[in-house]
Length: 415
Ligand SMILES: NC(=O)c1ccc[n+]([C@@H]2O[C@H](COP(=O)([O-])OP(=O)(O)OC[C@H]3O[C@@H](n4cnc5c(N)ncnc54)[C@H](O)[C@@H]3O)[C@@H](O)[C@H]2O)c1
Ligand SMILES: N[C@H](CO)Cc1c[nH]c[nH+]1
Ligand SMILES: [Zn+2]
Image (cartoon, rainbow, N blue to C red; front, side):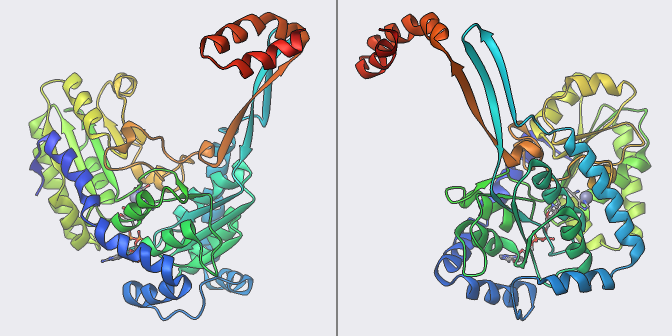
């Protein structure tokens, strides 16, 4: 079931799966640009098989959603929200910090939340109330005033409840590339946003990449991935369970086991086949496993460098000296250390964020956090004494650049 992989060609294949949908996504974007709301109604019928009556979810519908869902589920959502909020509160920066660098010169940084952001919450092959929390809670913690959200119809009432718990002010029934286009370009019903965050399938991710001139984005957060680094001390059943857990998201999901022990790879393979027999989403999993597999490394150092090349969305460390691997590894969206840290804990309830870069992008992007919803301005407070101190440098360098007016703006004050 799991085949041996070549790291380089696997990494290349992961990136190119997005390129395959750019043409169809650009048609969808153009249609939303031209026809706005009516394109959203049309695509809901075509892709989600829903005849929409309206795009916006009303306050009455939010109230009705609470009546529809089991109270026990709501309690669990509230508990998860509290854990996610607590971890994200720790990430908040001071609104303003100032430090006197020398007499007369004080420098600092002022942090300002974005005004209006859009959260995309997937809903094609599964519904994702947890992602409603993961996208909106950091925005709320950052202080964003207007948090709008799009998710494909029909919208699960639990997702509506999760939006409400997280503090979302506007919810729209729109999915896929068309939802991203609507939030980036605006339609009659959906006011454009400054930034779009949230995960989705290849269509959603391609649309985010294409519309970056109109709305800033978090990063490409496409089909789920797990990388596992393991040695002979690892439990093959636990590893197989983690593989299935990410594979069940999407036929384009991918799982890679990197190990120094070939016999572990064989045992994991057997466990995967066993677990698959009772997996309700086995059709999706089998497709995802077709682009998954294992890599045999000669040493733990080589295993770490393979993981760094793969740069997985999630990394599970299943080795005897896990802290040494944690210290050495550079590229992974979120890292799960030890046999009792399944990725599913981060998906729902440890408090960390599950919106993470995929397709090798954890080499350059961080997972979703409070900073994604803020921007900073540097500040300088300079008095006469401070200006006297740095005035010569400014005048000299400005003159050297031939920028007379720059130099003069200092000279005029020092007269
Ligand atoms: N990286 C992360 O942080 C993260 C987190 C959670 C989920 N995910 C991923 O999010 C994805 C969710 O995918 P999903 O499909 O369930 O939901 P989705 O909401 O991303 O996509 C559903 C939408 O895709 C569009 N679509 C479907 N087929 C299409 C086609 N042929 N052409 C154009 N558009 C089409 C439709 O508009 C539909 O509403 C999975 O890949 C999952 O692994 C990633
Ligand atoms: N594993 C997903 C990120 O790739 C997040 C998620 C949501 N629900 C379950 N899992
Ligand atoms: Zn998951």
